[in-house]
Structures are given as C-alpha cells and as structure tokens.
Image 1 (cartoon, helix red, strand yellow):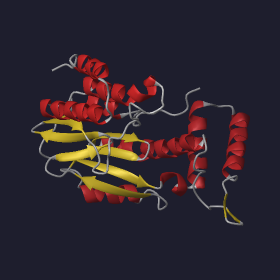
Image 2: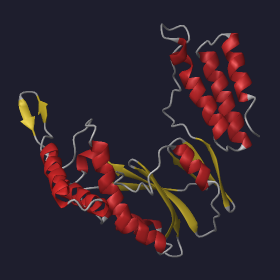
Image 3: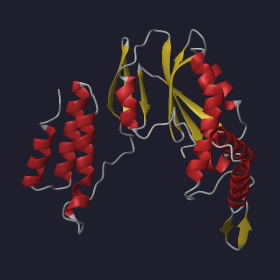
Amino acid sequence: MEILLNIYSIKNSLEIAQVITKLCLNKHMKLITLDIKDLYSNLPKTGIINATKFWLHSKSHNIEENKQIIILLKTIMEQNYFQHNENFYKPHKGVAMGSPLSGTLAEMYLQNIENSYIKQWLDSKEIHYYRRYVDDIIILINTQKIQEEQLINNINSINNNLSISMTKEESNKINFLDLTLIRNNSNLEINIYRKETSTDTVIHYHSNHPIEQKMSAFRYYINRLLTLLLTQKGRNTEWATIQNLAKKQRLPNRKNHQIENTADNTPT
C-alpha cells in the first residue's frame, strides 16, 4: 500500500530538467533554493509520530493495525543512541543516521508539512513551482504576492527544530543539484553544475578494477550529456570536460573512440 503521495519529491535532476525548461516565466518570478540543515538529527519525534498517524489514517481504516504500527515506530525511535569513548548518549530529537527507516520517516514528516503549507501557497499563486530532493528544495516564487525573505521566514516558522537556509538568483543563474538554471527572458535553460571543489576524479584506467567499474563514470557522464537539454555552449563545455577526464585517466584509444561514437549521437 502506497502511503505517501510523493507529489513534490523528485528522484533526480533529470525530473527537474524535463519540467522546469517548459515553464513560462515573467519578470516577477524569481528562483530560490532552500537547504534543510542537518535534517535527520533535527527531525522532531512528536512531529514524525503525528505525520505517520496522518498518513496511516488517510490510507487505512484499520484502527487496531494503525495503533500497532505507531507503537512499533515509537519503540524503534527510542533506540536512537550512540557511544563516545566510554559514555552512551541519547538525543532528545532526530532519527538515527544510517538507519534504513530514517529516510522514510523524514519523507513522512516533510510531505505532511508540504501537504499542509506548500499546497496552500501553490493554490494562492505565491509559489509557482516547488520540488524537493531529500533536503534540497527549489522554488519559483511570484514576487508580486510574496518576497523571498517573507517566504523563508514563513517556512522557518513552521517548526523551530528545522533550520532552512536560502540561496537567491545571481546574474539570472542559480545552482540546484548538478544543474545550473539560467533565466533567458521567459524561459529557463540548463547547464551542468560542478562545485568549485570538484576534482572529477574517477577510477584510473590502469588500476586493478573490473573494466565495467572503470567505465561506469564515463557512461554516466555521457548519458547525462545525451539526456539533458543543455545549451549548445554548455554541451560543448561538458564534452570537453569528459574528453579531458578521459585523457587524464589514460583511457586507451579504443575506449576514447567508444566514448566519441556514443557522444556523436547527442541530439543538437
């Protein structure tokens, strides 16, 4: 049984690229990105329990089963402790880092907030577009109805445990995940974004690894180049980066030719 709606959550940057490049912008619309600081360690336990109850009751009318699930959830959440030197510590909030359940608990809590607040702001047209990848959020707002600072204040007031920081557009550009979004009149264009600290290091061709592992990064880079609707300048830049990376890792000529033949299929 699917409990969560997953209306606003995305799986990867491709989902963003496929939709956001089709949006029509006006001069009053601004892009911002939000980052939830230390999400897992700051999630409120009571908020998670209440969110879980909401989603369970919205999908199932088996009262006894729902009660049992909540009891189990409370038991699991109480097992969150860690050891430092000879002492044991138990956080008063948050979920366990590394637990296979923590991601689901975070989604239940955040999607409950989105269902209560984001939907309302979308309906009022204060927000034109909203998507979230785990703890990274991108929003297209209508500044005729709300300003960036007012929106971030509203979001931070929802729960005192969560701290959310905002990044605004600079020179009509903003970065989100591995994309750079570029405002071009009424449309948005995309390019590949790499952090300044990125080294683009992959497994060296002469290392003692299976060939599939050595080529996996290049398959990913080429697939991204083929899939995303990049600008021509961005496409040329990314292709040059891939070529330089192949040269740096000393790929033999036959492997370079394979990469080039694949990239030749890139749509223009």
